Length: 618
Image (cartoon, rainbow, N blue to C red; front, side):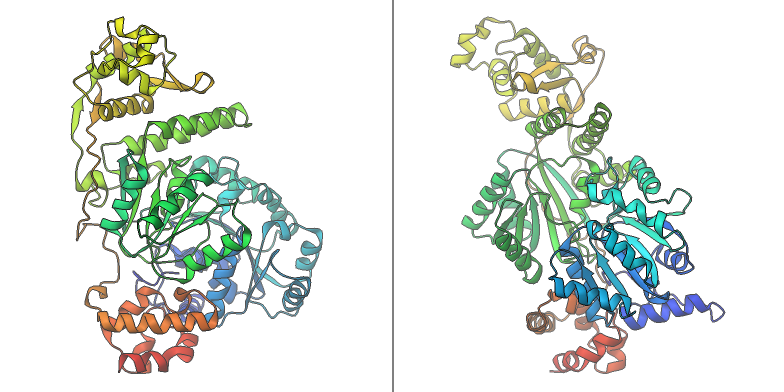
């Protein structure tokens, strides 16, 4: 859990539960106080209550079940969908002195038996279990004979068919409420719209349980969406100019594009590793381990990568293809800046992205209702990409959160407001061109006709003799592509997948052709905006980080890397960057002073205190 931005609070002596929770928070996790809704959630679950928790990535969800598990009798059972998530969480807990283990397919028969023995013996505080393992008759029978503190269902959106990452194995988790009705259940997710929340509550037996909804705002993340021209060159320029030597994640839709993009980055001198389901399992695991354990590694991946990755110092997340929904976009971009430091969510987006995603929906095996919901979710994401207003505000309103003011000061539209132009006439020309050519042709041919290019195809179909030939020569190809994209995004045109993505008019196009609709389009510049040094809402790193001794930071990181290799754990499990920054700012010289640094609990002080002080005092 990130240590930056922790509020310092105290509990009244007359509140034993609050005092115990704060004492354990401090001694085990090294944190001086709760953030946001954490205290209410911890109190509610520790008292035996069920709840649904919606909290952004990096907001401290894991503490909401880890701490109650330590405060209640028995072992906390955590349902987790990914092996990487379980491994990292358990490694971090073991560093804190918490007895934690996993039960999943990576264990041998002997290892699984030993975990089960420890569980029955009451030797575990937390056990992370894969959903498909938990619902087996053998596991359920074992749990019925075990003292259980609580059940935590992490990434709970996976239970919903309306969620962005539905997993069939999560459906069986309804058995928890049926078989263990007296044991508190806490379902947690970072992304869920109203429809998804309702299905989570219904399937997990939480319809009457309170919902704790934290702000979805990640103010340290700068949101940027650019017009896609040459996405690989745009990506290289973005990394070189904005995030050289930083860790980052680049998302692509296909395995082939992942491989091509990783190869192109490496050819440009940027360390990048591919990750997708088609890779050999050993290579995939090795690439993931390098990304987690080494500094400055970029992973290029399909969406198979990332859920549950706890690496806190990912400085950027890039999308070279449009995700399926706002939820997916928010979840994926949320992997940046988990430590609260300034980070970037950057996406290159174009007309083909909309066409491709809509074709995938149309060709899917889903029901008509599922397709309608999927198109609605895609349209909401396209609206976010096309908006000329604050992107953060639009994103938050999607999740039902109203924002104060009209500018966040830390998205591309707020930092450099886009210029608008009246595209009504251009839209009429394009729609007329699509209509008069028979609504049988794609984007490139229509642009050729509008600009007046005498291509073989134009001459073959006699389109050089139409009244629309060359009527759009005042705009260039890039500008016409932007017009097309925005007309498709607003529903005046659609690409017919059955006819090679021919652009066809919708019923609503009539109003544009008749001049009844005024269309204001954003002017596409295609340039990468330089980062603002002091974005109004984007600087959430520790306030002492700017005063950090750079040489001491380097020495502490080098020491941390050695310890991480020795213990075979990610570096951030030893110490978070934010903790190192505070040490390098305050220069503690005694154990008691070091103990006051957020992120230094009793076990870390015992294990590493002397070494850290020796480095500080060197």
